[in-house]
Length: 103
Image 1 (cartoon, rainbow, N blue to C red):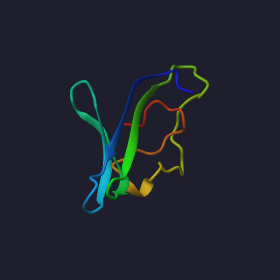
Image 2: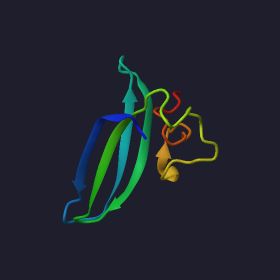
Image 3: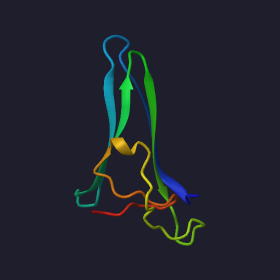
């Protein structure tokens, strides 16, 4: 369990009621205090048809040293959800790890 979540954002998009289906993606970019991009991940959402909607939640979870999750390590053989649609991603981490490896 995370100690707490210092950032949580939720939003909903709705595809226009008329027209063709469009393909959507979520792009997440993480930058350091100098504005340098540390990592970027693109996750495919899929096609939304007229009047369909999707709700997205982004949460930054914080873990304190000594939390019940133990040490973080790379999870061999684990792929993130939607792995076929993830690009520029770091290896999957054990659940409960606060950060992924940097490039």
